[in-house]
Length: 540
Image (cartoon, rainbow, N blue to C red):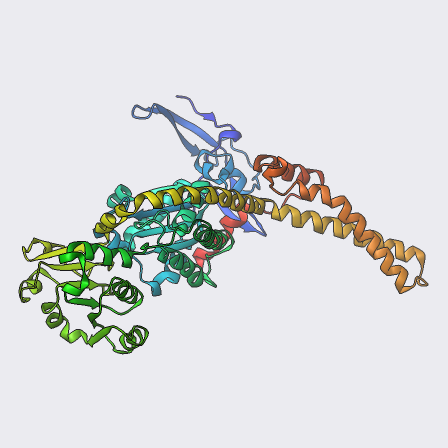
């Protein structure tokens, strides 16, 4: 096929740092990027039978080609990307999305590998925000879920980068993660987090511990680069939603936490459904261990052994429950204590197994079938321990049996909670949408203030030096009042308010109209500024 010049409107430009390339040179100029290029020509046109799409093979004309253009062009790199197929994603509005795995989609074997220790959460946020298309990030890692919330410049590329990062830090293959992950975007991602915070997506419907874990995400994220305005605002609003749902629906009443469900599950399996007939061992005296002890006491358990690395926490718990006999034992006595127990609750942060099949086989026989209730993630009890006839093992995935017991009442309260969540999603989305117009609002105010200050200065100069301070103040207040009155209408139409019939599309149109009318177009577009910021960050 004969060569022909590819039209400017369909020109495809690949920007890269190859210093040896002769067909293009890229040099930064101030806040813009200058692209000096030679016209592209179509050397061949082929068709891919798999996709049915034609492929243009483009090459730059050689310097000796008479059709080459001698004058170099200075064009914004972002603008060139926007007009190219290669840069379609730059037309996307950066948005919130969640990439996650939960007990709904992934077994505990996968989730435990993906869990991130609390101490590593700030580093995780930093690493995520170092990815090419991720602006903001937060990680919600619990025993039942591993969810990453991000603000991404591109949905497709953002999902791909985050999934690859999850695979890298966990050792789980990308294909396995994709098989078990769920993806939610924008309003659906917001709704999901609100449901999570309210306890509607928990294994035990309405459980209260998840709200504390959402609060902890905000606490850990404070001051960490990347936990910025949108993601921070999302999680703070989720906390508000969680509190409101629990207050207005009373969904948290009764046994609604993982620890209480574990205690109930064990009670359903022991003789006479009574803890007075069995010997109880609790391994771990941290937050989860303390909750297990609390619920055991509530179910009538008066004697128990607690194994922990230090005695301090056990002593504090013993002071809280003075009517209960709580015996402390160090970890060195773990196997001995397990041998003398009928029900064993494990709730530690240990990343290695505490009970293997071989170890459990050596334990003396229990009064009944020995129960291991393992609510740790990663698990503390090897799953194959259940193969032993004398032993049963339950983990966090087995707690569904307890959930079913009070499902009807929980579902009724969940329906009430959904109405609250719908209201809160609309409120948050309106706030988030309003952020799109913030640069224009600031620019318009600054523009009006420059005119006001300049005209006032001219007015005072004409009036001479004998104008009293009182009159100067009056003139100043008059000019400010006029400006505020004039700006009130435009400002109102830059704020998203569905109750007044203004929706995001209309607001964005108003924003562009004001930019054109008052000449407020940014020297650097918001998206270009984000891209430049990402490039600078990656070079540090």
